[in-house]
Length: 576
Image (cartoon, rainbow, N blue to C red; front, side, top):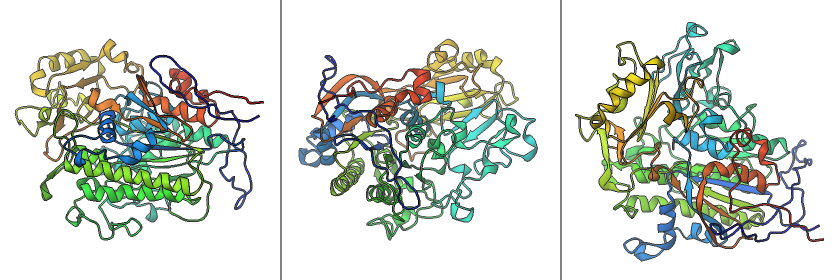
């Protein structure tokens, strides 16, 4: 029996499909102390590896512009040649939408689990849980803690960003000083039902991930991301990723000898003790370069740091931050502002440079796959955890930075810790270009909504979701301890910030927040386009299908009936 690719029609909206693969399993083979070698034991022509790349912030429009070219950019020539080349043997989804809320944490979980917050239980990297107790120590960002607060106190802010690192000023989060573990358990929320055990990010995630399924089938797994808290991708029982690399993005920038052009750093003025990697267009490229080198090492049969031999991962990848920073940063110290020049998505020179950097980095990965004779057996999926809003620079309204008379919704309700009734009604509020509000007294939800409705001119208008309108998207907050009680989606362009360093943000429900690049490529594919609606959560079951595994092994896929991507109908083609 020979397994091969073939085209299959899938209706008017789909102009293509991916070839069939059979359903073998990974088989262990001795290598270096009994390790499997990560090879897919099947006949020639099957997919053995999936390389998943998130270019955070990159819209479908960004890809259309850089692939086709714009008259006033790069002499009118396309400016992402490597991505464009992948599209010549790939399926391009024009109407692909990221998770809601469109933040990195739920965006990551959508890609890894196939689920939304309904099944995954993740709304933002910093959120709230009414069933958990506060951490044993107050976190660096001020989440109140204390050893005596568990199990007596129920309901706590949950911080799964850099504030749970031992030392977020260090690139390794302080891991080298604490036995290799960058996370300080004293900063984690605690579970009163488990003898007040600290809740790690992977414990917080309610379902398994693609890494769990692939590893259980004998595969080798790897992933690189931006905070140690992104060990959440480990899923249950917490060991899904064999080679996890999570350099802290909010650490103080330092020279990187292993990254070309980054020793010394190209922007030393943004590498002070009060700086972080996202404060600089140039330095963020160096940070991303660390993860690019990790991918190149893994393609070469090494671990992410280039150490001893390892299998080439069956699933691996990384996220890029450079484009997201290019879209939203105003680097005042050097007089450079990123973002777009118009509503058509014409990139500023700063954003153009970030897109070109990422394109060149992906080109290096493709070159290395070809050099190692792995290109044909690797399915490359390029998407984004989230978009960025607004594209149109004329729509930007930063509240309260641009108008001190305006205030975010949480302030309309009295602010976190003061509250509508004076007793700390707002337990938590997450506000970027959306406002998620958790109340400590849920009976006050109708009164709070009424107060917001009467004050729309203060926070940028938009839509208010609560009650049944909220239940249509997420679990009812009276039954799920993690669901916000109120969500405010303001008018497009509103960003809740007191500073002027940002000219855009993400997290919201708008088209600019959610319509992202999604490209699936392999040399056996012809260039095709799918114009129907899809979601990034469909990437997870598609990855398993491509590797010959059952997508229903993902718990979110079972609970939410998440389908594989429609333009990639994978099935068996037996040539006897």
